[in-house]
Amino acid sequence: MRRKQPKIATDPVAFEAFYRRHVDAVTRFLARRVDDPHTVADLVAEVFIAVLDSAHTYRADLGTEIAWLYGVARNTISAERRRVYRQHQLSDRMNGRRQLAADDVARLEERIDAERDARKAFAAMEELPEGERAMLELVAIDQLTVTEAAHALGIRQGAAKVRLHRARQTLRNLSFVMDGAR
Amino acid sequence: MNFEEQLLMDLKTEIAARADRRRRLTRTRSVLGVAGMAAVAAIAVPLLTGTGTPAYAVSTNTDGTISVEINEFRDADKLEGDLKEAGVQADVSYVPIAKQCEPGRGEVVGGEPSTLEEFRDSMGYKAARVRTGGVDIDPRYVGQGQTLVMEFAENKESAEGGVITSRFKALVMTGPVEPCTLVDWDVTR
Image (cartoon, rainbow over all chains, first blue to last red; front, side, top):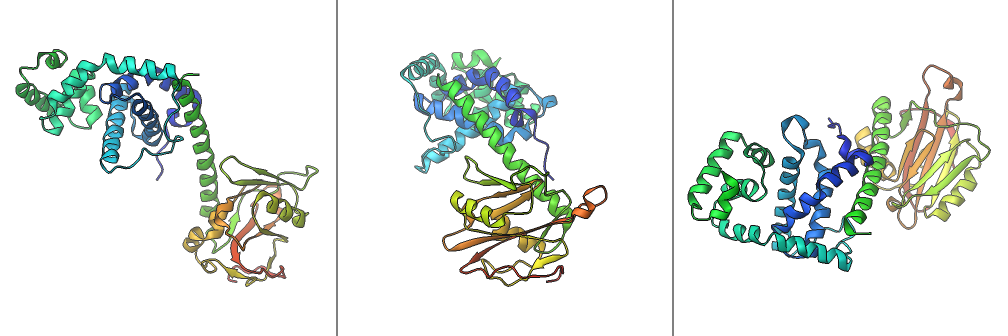
């Protein structure tokens, strides 16, 4: 049985509105995790392709668009890491590497630079177990609410709170990470 | 144009391409769902769209497929020539609804399908998808030295109300293809 495709995957006008609402947030989300402008641009393309692929999983009544979108972006980026690990190239579904003008590169570098602290925080969080780290990332760094982060990770709110609590215990000393996590 | 705008354009193109693929898929599915007939898509939509002057029109799409709009069952030879120019060796037969080309006209790639499942897996099904008003052809499934053999039939009597029955058969054959000899239509053959 085919699931009905939501409008953002089928209607170019609805998609454009969605894209314009979120393209900046997605770019910053990626700039917090990757420090190369070309990879960021490629990943932005990958994330929105993944949006088309998985639009049927979005339920307006279950959470905000941004929480869902960050979930998609997280999956895309971990798929990307697996790919890099296997020394595979980025998929060429969207003409391979995005063509970037000098302006684009400069703008992306600014974004990447602005997210320097966030990337440091990621480094500090590396020792945490994956589930806890994911939760802390989304709440402290990406500024989602606990409910939204739970939705992005597809877990219950109770479980999300437990993970967050544990992560905070472990990282008590990292005040700049904790600021957003209260 | 900055990369965000360029990406938006690419994505909108992708959405359109996906919508197109979905439409084709859905149409063929419903067609086969209604028919349930071995090896032949019996279709419940009018194949002919009207009496526009040209019998047909061939256009090539950006994804490499070829769309044929069919207005009238004539000029099959000319259509074959145009299809060859568009990159696919084809044999086209327009037959009355009660007739069919005698089977066994050539060597069918993967064997002649005898069940609906086999038909859906067949090269002919991949290469040619019938729809209202014509057929979409994907030349990538017709190899060098192979011919896409298509047979069209439509019951014009029932075109006004009631069940409209059309028939379409597509096979990919290797090597020489015998000309169509009309025999009575028999679903078991």
